[in-house]
Amino acid sequence: MGYPNVRMRRLRSARWVRDLVAESNLSSADLVLPVFVCEGTGVEDKIEKMPGVMRYSCDRLVELAKGARDAGIKMLALFPVIEDFQKDERGSLAIDPENILCKAIARLKREVPGIGLMADVALDPYTTHGHDGIVVCGDVDNDVTNSVLVEQAIVLASVGCDVVAPSDMMDGRVGAIRFALESGKFVNTIIAAYGAKYASSFYGPYRDAVKSGRECYLDKKTYQMDYRNGAEALSECMLDEMEGADMLIIKPGIVCLDIISKVSAASRLPVLAYQVSGEYAMLRNAGEMGLFDYRAAMLECLIAMKRAGARGIICYDALGLSEILAA
Ligand code: PBG
Image 1: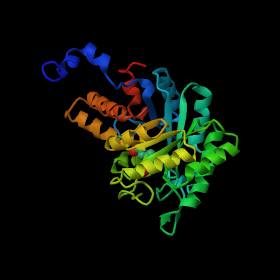
Image 2: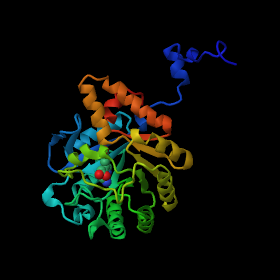
Image 3: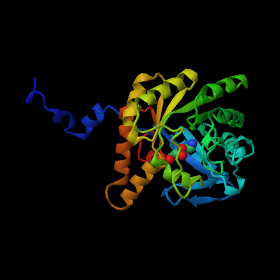
Image 4: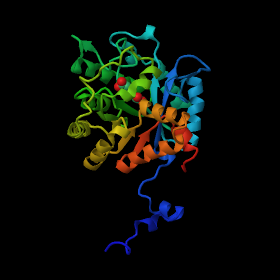
């Protein structure tokens, strides 16, 4: 068996046959749209480092969410923009049910039924130092942080958050959150654990978006994973699964295709890949420079994540893409 009986090009010879045999596909149902919510009314504030992405006040977010739902997007991932004067060392605002994130969730739940709402469980938008947890003696303290993360998860669930997403990488937080949710009768709250989250330069633009940016890049290497390691991601994800996670998130996306592939093969849980802010900004800026067709390059990256095994993808351009994708 071989050439000429086998000609690999036969199945590539026309668009219809390529479409017919394609292994991976992308539809708007695969996409999660991350959104940044800020105080005020009528606010649509451009994010300098993320062209095409805005910070929205609640009223504008409602309109955006309706558009996303009607375009076939199944979930929003909400991130709060907190002004410096509202932050403190312990990120106290994170557990205040009146904070902007909680207000947005409650309002979206009321006014835009039919779309899932996910929110990060981590303290970084709320802390003056920008770390994801409570700093004790110069490092983020695991167990002290966990107790606050549990409170944060409960507050989020109580205002109607469908999916809590611990993104802090503390050990044992998924189990602690699951136990608290069960005890509080939030039995249907989904935990989408950031199973493998690497300490990555690609988060740069996001930190600008939520105003947690520092002059020098904040080092989170004592809790986020070392990108030289792959096997460790499997341990992390297996632990999260055992502790009661319902889904696993892997981030960044394009530099973690191997991880997406290994985790999807090893775990029974659905895997979401997160195409993070730096990946988005890179593609967008390169497109604007005329280096390539932005949309085509974007689709190529996202489909690569699906080919690797991702069930869904968190993508800043989910809405733009849903216009060109079938629902
Ligand atoms: C914080 C958090 C980060 C992102 C999502 N949640 C940044 C960080 O860990 O420093 C990054 C998302 C992105 O870059 O798009 N827990």
